[in-house]
Image (cartoon, rainbow, N blue to C red):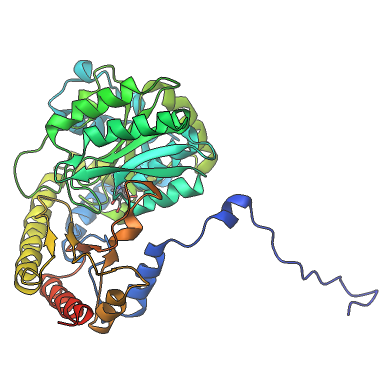
Length: 434
Ligand SMILES: Cc1ncc(COP(=O)(O)O)c(C=O)c1O
């Protein structure tokens, strides 16, 4: 008990914000913790990039070059601008336009509409902050990138799933979704369509070129109450192992006012640098920069200078070529192991990914792959872990399937990829009593 001359002891608990209180733990945090706690477990769950291929030599060369010139070294070690390093914004824009086969004039896009961010997750977060109010709806592929589902939940918005097939989001399903939501009086709540247009996480599908223009047109037509944006996430675009690249959805946005592009160097170079960027339609620029100023007043200057040097010295292309070679080989190992251990089990199927780092598989319909189902624990018992597909589905719209898994060949070495799939085969047979 406090005495008159001792300080009063306060024992009241902290009062967190409404936002913090309504936002629960995300399933992926549980999976990551489990993998960290148990090094012997073969985690095919993490979307980490391959540690063996991280560009240590190229980065040392770039860092040395940045620090060798006192002027650049000081700039790199100083605060940078809120919007990001100008030369880097020019360089990333030039790359995007080259990939899309467009000139600056055709694209109507200049470097002052580019914002450098701390990974593309920051861009996704800033876009949500700027556009979304409590109760707003964001249409997403079902399934979709689950971290962004969490970002939306944090913003108080809701994600609404649109069906996909092997060619990505189905335009007729998108049309039907708009129609259904309009009939229910919900159209004014829709602010955004989110599409990962190359080798989606988790489904690995790429939106067909023939669908890209259609998606832009559908969204334009349904923008009756306000301008609905498309947030195009191109995180996995450089990781292509089959066929030619195709132009972004943005390149089909003739008015240049519809599509926000989120890009990152995490997958193609190094997630540790945390360099991403956004290409923005003009009206979004000022509000997004205000929001960014209130968040961090600029992403790390050092990382941006290092990445600029990597680009200037021509170190990125050879790295991406090596990366693709290594991921292609590991993808093939995973597909061969799936053929050997899971193909013989009735009801199992998957799409062969042409890029990215994931295989998305359907297991027999009676199998529940979630934390509550039997398979997850049996897989842990067999010393492997996957991402249960059901946690990748938006909360509303196209219903979640319970019998799917996301398997990543990104992080683990080839022999552990093969072992992990063999272990999954054993766990699945046990779950089926076979
Ligand atoms: C589809 C997608 N978008 C964005 C990101 C974010 O990456 P970063 O914040 O490292 O740029 C990821 C990371 O896994 C992803 O899978």
